[in-house]
Image (cartoon, rainbow over all chains, first blue to last red; front, side, top):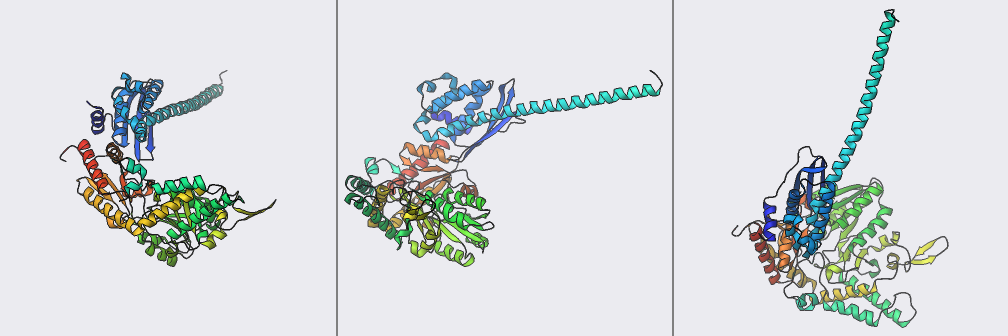
Length: 180
Length: 404
């Protein structure tokens, strides 16, 4: 399949297009030059991408890159995704080594975009959105941990107060019963 | 019709440059005028007491006179050189706007504006506590005069309107708009963005009865980095300066400074004389062609392109009928993103713009994320239209399949 056919195949029948229920992280990126908009949602399992969806309005390059991305990043952790994103950036910038890198899978079809730099932001939009979604997941996890810790402390304090009140009540009852 | 006069186009016979609404190509006459000026008459205008500096000063003044005559300005000191339309409009917002707009005033822009005639007023309104309003657009991409009429009133302090929409090519009927504003909003200043008008239509500032008018050199065969702001003398004289420094002062005291006369008050620093000479050469070129001829030529191409594109199933053209647009065809092709269309066309040397055209409020109203835009100028011909049509058919075959 030629590079163009590969891009058009992903464009016509994109993989993992849609909205994720209860994502751990979600982010939307805009390309103000051409009016593209892409949303990426991720669910993480043990710090790795367990599930991923994308949606939005974009051209063939943007949609194909997003579709290919969702295939490639499943099972990867944040560091591996950052490394892969750097390879994609190199590919789009015209790096011949990246263009021949089997780790990039179908994405190698985007190598020709280096000849039209104006389209590079289209190819990178999904990857930028993914990074934002992962940041969002990290922030959410931190907020949840903070909320949990606060809830925990509040619950403990309440439990301690209850225990203390109960102990006092028992003591008072004993005193009332004339027991030592 | 004049392709041979444009070195870049003459050098690349296969190139179909259909993006003149973004920027125009330059005729040899403009490049030559600038080269000769730098080679024979260059020095810093207004400063030196020597013959060469006087020559440079004369050329700068002559350029101003030439441009003023071209756009119908009798009082040429009211024609200021700026960096371009964007700077001209920001100048008005920063000087007249800050001084004149009071809390509770109303600022009206239109749905058709380029961001450069939208955002400065949005910011000014927020800064001055004024109300920001938008006169709406009709379904076919014209300024909705009823919407404008309904929003005009005694508190209206400013109406900012484009002469020609950069995204659609719609020509604003200023002959209807200006009297309407004057009648219903007697306190309003009228600011016109003429960036897409001066290159393509005959513009007569003194007859327009507007307060400010801005345009750019690079869209009218001139160099980048130079543009124009025209203002009414009384308003320009009352306005505080925009930038301060050399050339624009009269007396600099230890505690107080007074300003030079117009136009120098608004031209701080060393004047952009080289680009002014280039712009004047562009004006001479356009004058030789004749603006009526320019309009006729573009209208014929716009009608041809609109007719040919509209005959392709899945093509949708935005804006009013071709005869009521300047040389712009803004369109979409079903199932092909404008960006993809632009890339396919580029493979055959057809240069168009795809995207939002710096007019997001307008595209929101159209309900589309992006359009493809082909725009014409005097160097385009029917072969360019044919290349565009063939490219669109090719993109359709690739994305949608042959025979659809």
